[in-house]
Amino acid sequence: MRENLSPGSKLLLVVIFFILYAPIFYLIFYSFNSGGNMINFESFTLDWYRELFHDTRLLIIVLNTLVIALLSALISTIIGVIGALVIRDFRSRQAKNTILSLNNVLIVSPDVIIGASFLILFTMAGIKLGFYSVLLSHIAFSIPIVVLMVLPKLQEMSPTLIDAARDLGASRFDVVTKVILPYITPGIFAGFFMALTYSLDDFAVTFFVTGNGFSTLSVEIYSLARQGISLNINALSALLFVFTLVLVIVYYFITQRNKPSGMGVKR
Image 1: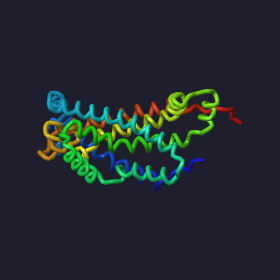
Image 2 (image 1 turned 45 degrees about the vertical axis):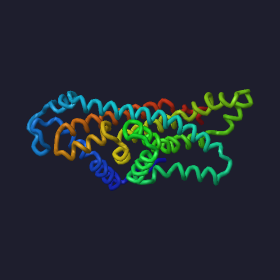
Image 3 (image 1 turned 180 degrees about the vertical axis):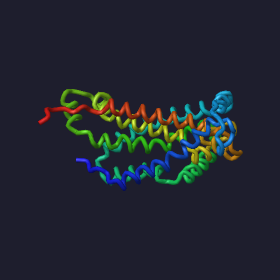
Image 4 (image 1 turned 90 degrees about the vertical axis):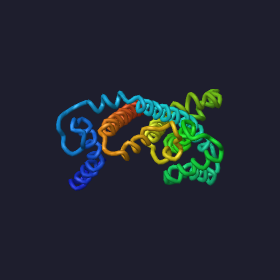
């Protein structure tokens, strides 16, 4: 049975959530301020949002960010699922642990080191910094995330399911597509949405590999913030927060829908 939280633990939890969300709601609140500053709230207005949607350059950057995020999440999910299947089939525990350690390097390494490494790599390879350099970088740091999301579901899967499918005459392709993939679907969705959010939020790596004429929202917001206070940033941040919240809700309902229903007779 679950233990009830003590009053002190509940208070600590409330304080932590307040510290995390107060700055976000502070930005959102002042995105509706007609005064043009973040000190005195004069009156409610949607002018900053209208100005935001009339900024063609910013809309192109939003489109760039979404395309990069969706493409990198899709490609990294495909590669990550294949990688997790390969890692699961390793018989040597030492080899499996070695591959997992290498997989985790991009997760535990500082973003600055990763970004600088990609910059050096693309420069030496003659790859022009821009759309493709950002896309390749996002795919590279998203693959380990997908592997970590999918691998636990594979390890949780009973080998008897595969044995039963083979006994019934299923080919290796049928086993993968009709037994394994349906079982690990929640892990695949989790990996895809994690890769998507990481790509949308990434700044450090993208900052290193972005070239002239191409930018993403995180880099653009940083550039705008350096120029001074503008409530356009607040409006943009508010929309990003709502979009991320929608992604989380969609992911929650998808995982709830894909949860295996209980089987057997209750006693």
